Image 1 (spheres, rainbow, N blue to C red):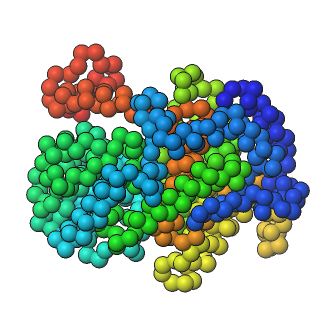
Image 2: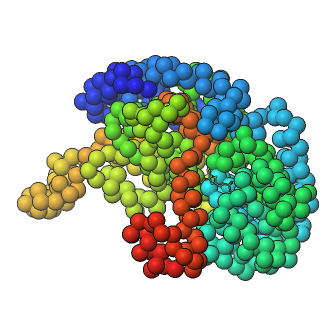
Image 3: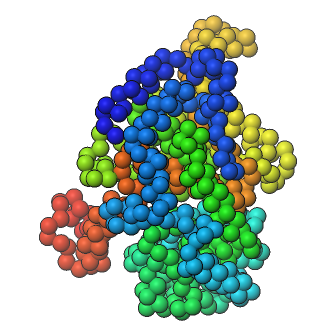
Length: 510
Ligand code: F6P
């Protein structure tokens, strides 16, 4: 994407910025209908975003110039779209009906293992980090009502020993299954934690890895090693044997339901033209907000307690994929390819950083997710969750003028002088953008579709920016330096070529 590609978009964004969001609604009675997109298990309303039909048209043209159709075709053809590692990115194949025999074979072994092991255990300790942790952790949290009774699932990812200590605390090793999840089986944190748990003596060991020989050499019985392949990227790997804890700890059929829902979203993304394609349009809106309107981050707010881990999951998916500064061909990018993803579950977030969203200087677009289906707990809570989510999207957009705030205070009996003094504090600028999305229910299928939606949106963002989303070289330098610093921190000689600050900290901490 070069400057010329973007000029028309910037001009139109500047034009639209002269109107408020409410003006845009007034100008087009069909706005909600036009800017609402349906996909399997998921509906998204972009009408409270600062876009219109022309903006979408310009973004569609940009996608065409970025060869969106071509790249999408290459993804689904299994070409080596990860061009710095010479690999395909075929996570979608893990959930396809016509997946290759090796995929079916591992899936069948996982299901058989789940059936065999459940009566022998009352706990699973899942060790992995990043893509080998976040997906299963999220799914098991989100689908808690579908958990097999009597199996506690613990996770540890952090190399801080407190994490693994908590993970095994109170468990009986004789009834525990340890699952070591690592694509490479070389990750420092995971292996350090795995050594601790193995020494504690769990009755059963299993592994999910693309390096089965290493897992066997470490001590996992070969029959309990579940492979996946180098064409599955870490943060796209939930659907592989990385989901073993889900297959064991969720009732039969749930993991398959997750895959089936994701496959439905794959078909939507693969077969739908850009302007009705939910991941593609959502990616375009993100780019619009970031690059045309200058909003460098967005807040992801699931109004669903069971989706509370979504922000953490999405931080890895989006920022590890698209946090890049060079194009696929190594050219410096003129624009950023990725914003900052952050957030927390509503309503809790309302009592925390929503103050900044409503009244801080500058706008941060928000993405809300609600569960339109059945809710757990008292029936009356469901309406309260929705009332809060809708109120927030509306309050961000509508705001409250100082005059209105002043009038309300005076109507309640406050003096004019006091009302004038407080009005600026109690006014809301409004005109702040958000997207509202709903899953049809919190089922395995809908969750699978939601996560696949985000995978494809991340890919579509990368295509629009012209980058490769499937490598992550940016995590390597820190790993190398940690390995180099370790001997000194373990009491050995400090490396002579350290900068003065780091050298002082090594002395202080060793
Ligand atoms: O953080 C870098 C990373 O390589 C992620 O991409 C990956 O999900 C994680 O580390 C764990 O890697 P592995 O599964 O090989 O242990």
